[in-house]
Length: 194
Length: 194
DNA sequence: CTCTGGCTATAACGGCCGTCATAGTCTACC
DNA sequence: GGTAGACTATGACGGCCGTTATAGCCAGAG
Image 1 (cartoon, rainbow over the protein chains, first blue to last red):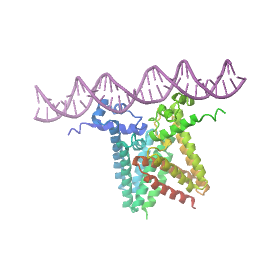
Image 2: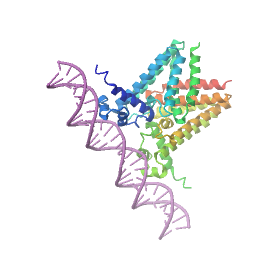
Image 3: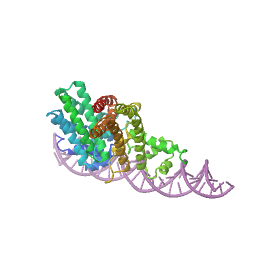
Image 4: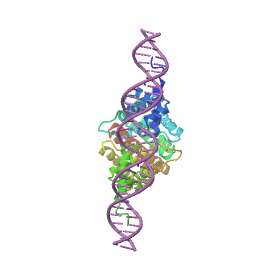
């Protein structure tokens, strides 16, 4: 055990993901993340000895896995349904937060590497994007789309949704998301019918 | 006059846009912006009395107008050429900076409003997005695309490019941009032929 | 030459930052 | 019951933040 009795660590990660999705990584302090999770500051350095970078990395992976779970489930009904769920998920986040929250993965991806190396959190963001694309692409292939075209379309879908979510926040409107949703759904529907 | 002899102000704005496109707004300090433009800190508050928000707002508008100028010029040769230039512009920024720079407008759009009001810089980001969309949509309409479809496609293009630029930074690869470029060009080409 | 006003130089203000250290508490097992 | 180890409490460290204030420079208008 020593597992079942520690939701505190997960609360910190989930809270960090939420705060990063709203304010970005560098504008979110460890003190605020701890307070938001009702955990003492010392605990964050107990659970995440490598500090902010580690916490950010885990927050990115946490979000990645959470979205991937929903995606995997809905893709069982086909690419169109999977895409619809993907769009609905992000629409919910943006609208329910009154256009204050977005995607923490994008927020971390937009972070200049301090030196010449890619920090782990940014690398995790790249992996999460790739994971979402892979899920979508596999489902497209399973429904008759040629492999390379499936990969390209999956990239377009993920990138377009990420960009549209950011755009919705700036405009304080869900209209862009609804507009791109329609077109992406048409694209996906067209790609599997052949 | 009192205009011709002051490139200092513009240097600050342009430098701020560059730094914001790399590090994001909250991670870029006014001191660093001043130093980057080789201007004294006091000058920033002389030129921008409302502080960081004003400087960010002007940096967003500056980038918006710079991109719009390129877009307007290339759209004279039609939507496909305009899109190609738009894509090439962002590809150059991402690749030339070794995947360290992106779009400052997106970086500002991803910023939680502190209170219940939208800060001016975020509002400016929304206007810049709308401006780019309007230019693209107008060109599409001029080439036979139905009005509402033109607007929707323009939104998709801008959002997809913004999202893809961010994705390229995370992955440290221009591949996503090349992949989405191909598909967006096909979409635009298809929309004007009818 | 004087004077005005745009620009600069310098320093200070309170405040929050990431990180670390140290001493405590409390629980779970031997 | 004792003891180890997971967690917490507290406070400190140097450093950078946005912003403001004040005094000084120095070109150009009168």
